[in-house]
Amino acid sequence: MTSQISRVWARIAELLPARADLTEMRRDPRRNVLAGLTVAVVALPLALGFGVSSGLGAEAGLATAVVAGVLAALFGGSNLQVSGPTGAMTVVLVPIVGEYGTTGVLTVGLMAGVILIALAALKAGRYMQYVPAPVVEGFTLGIACVIGLQQVPNALGLPKPEGDRVLVVTWRAIEEFAKSPNWTAVGFAVAVAAVMLVGARWRPTVPFSILAVIAATVVAQAAGLDAAKPIGALPSGLPAPSLSFLDLGSLGSLLAPAVAVAALAALESLLSASVADGMTVGQQHDPNRELFGQGIANIAAPLFGGVPATGAIARTAVNVRTGASSRLAALTHAAILAVIVFATAPLVSKIPLAALAGVLLATAVRMVEVGSLRAMARATRSDALILVLTAVATLALDLVYAVIIGLAVAGALALRAVAKEARFDQVPLDRGDHSAEEHALLAEHIVAYRIDGPLFFAAAHRFLLELTEVTDVRVVILRMSRVSTMDATGALVLKDAVEKLRRRGIVVLSSGIRPGQRQVLDSVGALDLLRHQGREYATTPEAIRAARDHLETAGVLPTLPAQKPRTSSEEALR
Image (tube, rainbow, N blue to C red):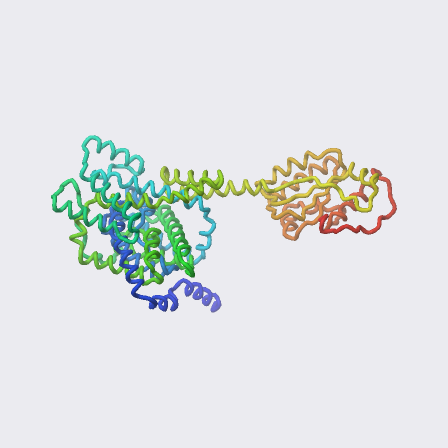
């Protein structure tokens, strides 16, 4: 009992902040504080915009950025990760808001946090490395398209039309705009997006997003433009934590959305942390701690009215580029946003919705890495297909289904490629000490096949077809030392093929069966069929001698004097 408690505590301790994290935060505090300030300036319009897009309002986005930003930085597994509301999560939340309302989203966020902590305890973070790059690229492209389309109603100065599907909502918004155009809102959105995109190329270190939003707000207020609808009043601080939204009776129906949110939070956060590692030298995140930190953040954020959070790739990239080296930068970013919530809420409330739509439109454009997409499309047809399918599924269905479809197609294509590597070739019998006449007699009655590569479900039936087409022989020798892997399907197919050959009077022998193969063959009853008179043959020469003995006994071959020991290398004939 004591040892079990010790193991549990050791696993929990692995997920908690370490003294080394605090030590690292004391190094170069000035640079990290400045990096945090820059990230906060970039994050402010994004937090507001994603809060509005989610359907819970700008205040929900700010609460998430502050609460989740602090807790994920403290408990997460990356020194450089910046967490908060993201466009990908917004895409998932919109239909949940439509079906379950605000309380449903808050409950889903809390449940997702518990699921993330469970994943961390199960050490599931390491499985992120198995997500293929085309799935990630297609996922990102699809998210960028959805984020851009979600901004169309606000960019056109219209309330969001009814509907859950982004394509349907976008089309309805365009129809409404055609009836009554609002060119003021369009002008704000296009101007802000253009300033961000052009400015990023001209001076990448300047936070043009906040400058463009400030300029749009000043113009809207000075000109008294009613068409530039502001985001509305914000609370002058974070609300007191509360569980009043929690409805225990609805937990069952919210489980599926919570799993989807948790899966997305895990995927995006671990991907973001990996990107941060790749942009630096010497940084390596702990995937399980990162899941734990995101779990803590997502449990806490709903208590303050926030939406589910993830690691944010764009803000994390800004953090790294501006010189961050410890968690202090992410903590500073959250602290500055908290100050903004308390001190400048009346000013923030005057920002035009169209300006925030412009920010998110530019963000969507910048998410698309044309070079990476081109590289994936040119790599192989399979990679291009996976990328396109994942992107289309993201746009037409939802993010979790898109990832599942991408992984399923990638897995199927990978299995197909591996199955093609399996070879089943007839090999000539080694002459060894036999004369040409003796070798010709053996060749008339004995055939040897070498199996190369995996013998598993994706390749097994092709093997069965080829093997059972053998004709005009008395003995078949299967050389199995080069079988790289075998599953139950492969063993069953092999058993079936051997039984069919034996019913036709053909004896089947084998050589070079490995220990791992012996176990799976024995489990399906195929091992005994590959033994001749209860014997296994470690090498091909032994199997050939056994085959000859069998043919001599059967009177097919004449009895010859005992042969001298073979001089050729056994390894070459295994």
